[in-house]
Image (cartoon, rainbow, N blue to C red; front, side, top):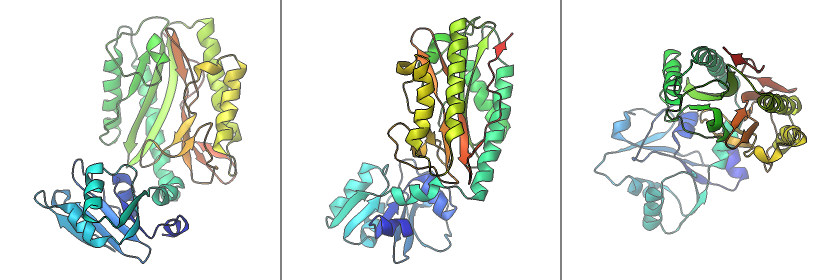
Amino acid sequence: MEAMKSQGFSQMLVSSTESVYYLTGLWMEPMERLLALYLNTDGQCVLFGNALFGVTQARGMELQIHTDDDDPVADIAKTVADGPLGVDKDWPSRFLLRLMELRPQVRPMVGSAPVDEARKQKDETERQAMRAASAVNDQVMAQIIGELREGVTEAEMAARVEALFREHGGERSNEGQLVCFGANGADPHHAPVNDTLKAGDSVVLDIFNPIGRYWCDMTRTVFWKEVSQEQRRVYETVKAANLAAEAVIRPGVKLCDVDRAARQVIEGAGYGPYFTHRLGHGCGLSCHEPPDNSASSLAIAQPGMVFSVEPGIYLPGKFGVRIEDLVLVTETGCEVLNHYSKDLQVLE
């Protein structure tokens, strides 16, 4: 409510599953149906949801349930006031356009920031959840690296990562795991295919999953059977960039300066053009959420923020290397949540 007031919103609709859960403790995945939580600074709180969601009680708020035969936006139209209305940045246009048709006096504005700002700084319960999720990620990483074998495919290993997360209590995820062999690792978001592992390949493993609603996300790069001098040089450069960035993280530091600390190492080694993405992203109830950890980010590190530090070097047609940790900003610095080794590994 305080963030709404400071940002000039007297009313807003929260529609993302994660943000509704953050505010209410109720987890609903609407798919094509409507989910919306209406808030205003007078204290009114109304949850709009489909009967299929199974919500029959919602403490501290009014509950308005519709069915597939109803026009759910009509109920919202009766509730909102004229003037500015904050809406989630990802609220489907089919609902927003209908609301604008029914209530032309309402002026929709992107209104995700008040909840995004609150979600940025994790409380102690959330911090413990993210530590626990990252501990599972460490275990899964160790297991999957131990299961690499000559001739296995990227797709097989990606499916195995998913299975391991399920075995360790992970929830269902619509995200796919990134397993990249050799030249495929030069594509930062390469989708696993049936290419097989062979001697001399780098293996980029970017694995992530929600556990207890909170996400883990980590990348490690290892080498199969042998490593060239170029691969070794690139690996040690990326590792140094990762460590340099983590060393400067503390409250009050601009995240663009964290990005710069990593990028300077890679540029100094002559690989600047091959670090092609931002240094990282916030992580919590969503795998990718504010704050942005990039060269253009104006965000300032504050205690409780969790974000990734994932520098990489990608040499087209050859190989790629990425090393990623999640870090938690503390009162005096940062806590690295991932503990799986970052030392260069050549697997036999």
